[in-house]
Image (cartoon, rainbow, N blue to C red; front, side):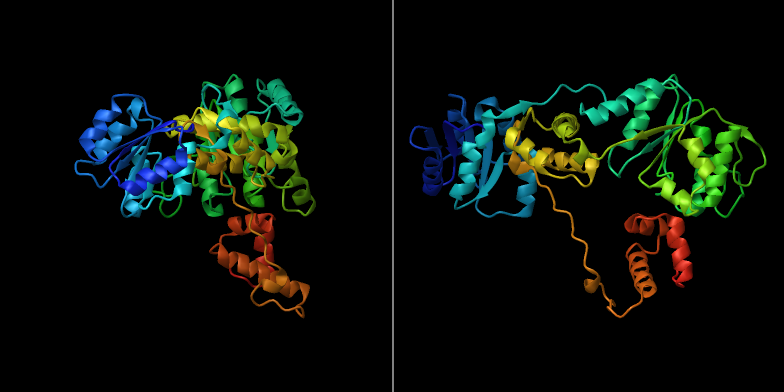
Length: 444
């Protein structure tokens, strides 16, 4: 919001008038009307930079506030109330008020609202919205990815996309589908790490009625549903060797069998897989099939983390702000320069996903047409506790005892789920399962 050179006060008392006058300076026009009728009459006489309205006046309600917020001559609407409550704060935000202040008015808070951010003239316009959100960037690292993507999109070869969590691997898969001759077919995505192992086979290949308890009807699997299109297997490194063998067979034979069935069903599917795991290391330890890896990695695409392509932060921030402002119905038109500087200074351990989360939160809390630095909140990563801080730890424990202690603590924290424990520990779920058996730890 720009500095208000003309302020209308409707209701309130002498303290409100004095606080506004102190906030905007002697050169600004400040008009105070004690009654609602006189205030509304003053509203039509000229264009105001800001209008302060007391919610304590008779006749003031949500409908009036809503009309005032959409009145161009009112400028930014600031609501005043005798007693602040969470309900009032939420209602004021819902109605689109610039701020809700309680009496006596805090001069610092009032000044921040009426003067607006100092970076008002340092702003970058948001780009026009073109279609859906996609992977954007022009860094040399990402351009290399785009070049390979363009060369292989029209083929039917399987593609393995690697990279840290949150780098945008699914966006690459969607781009491959969109640029391929299969664009008119379905794009089916499945996160292999998010589905329990005992249900994943049925989810991928389908099942016949009566195949197991709860299978009350025939169900098509993801391979069948993706027929004629693209199947995206996210976190392909998080599955058992048994299931790896079945996926390998489906890729080789181009057919699947539903759980509990004998019919071989032909499939015409282009598979794009993704993982943040080090699959060659898993192959070396016997936890991943080498033949499946080479079947998946006909084309290997690696997405670098955001910290290695910092030149993309600006473009990504503008892209996300524009899309998310439209999605949430916010009036944003610019990204403030200081907000961008704050985003560019962060290391982004959560990569593009973390950046999108921060920008979305900023879009939701920003006021006016400029996303300022005040709206950008970046949480510091939680520091991992030292070994000495772990309950039950003793420097006299053996390495095996420390390992057993830590695995049991992680499993307890994730309610015994092997997939989530593997994510925390940074290893394959088969490793967690094997270690748990070795140490006599119950997991599921």
